[in-house]
Image (cartoon, rainbow, N blue to C red):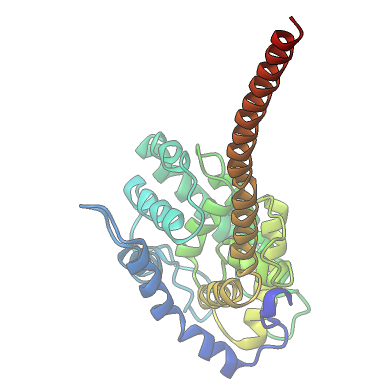
Length: 295
């Protein structure tokens, strides 16, 4: 694994739980470091909405004996979506145009589109867990269900596979993973922090399959898997690949210092020019004297 990140396939449940316990203090420290503007929610407050309040309000109940899903207790509005997008921008990479694009969607369209996406997700034959003893692959089933929902959600302006997966994750935190950079890099790119991400539907399907495999093996939810991926990659950045960035900056600083050194040489050259002028003046004076002597 890149940058010293532990392999998700070799991770034990005890190790997973230990990493999961590191998430709250990590987010708290990042929240304090970033701060917030007057009237703006802190990252920690947004994090609570994303992981606690929103799932409690919008998640699909999956506790029925027949494995079927009940509809969410509340319908998600445009304001809810904007709050989740704000969390996404503060929690991960900031994209300056994303919020304005999402905000430009008509509120009724957002609500109806999310409702249609959830219907596609729930009605998919692969959305429900396969009965015990069947040969159906649960990872492929979860990925297929998620893909059906993403196709509907991505029709909204500013909503790509990553943001669409966030909305889906809030509605099904147990099975639907959020397409975060950290989750993709850890689960699909061997923990390489410099691996390219295209944020495509194909990549998300691969992430959903990998997340289902690891979550099933460990007996954890996609939501907790996402948190552990965040801890793993942030820790990897700070102790592994991270220091390479400051090193390059130091090198640049040294080069800049060297570039600025010729300034004293110019002064020396200027002095040299002055000396040459004096010498030429003296030489000219000597010539005039010799002429006077000759005359």
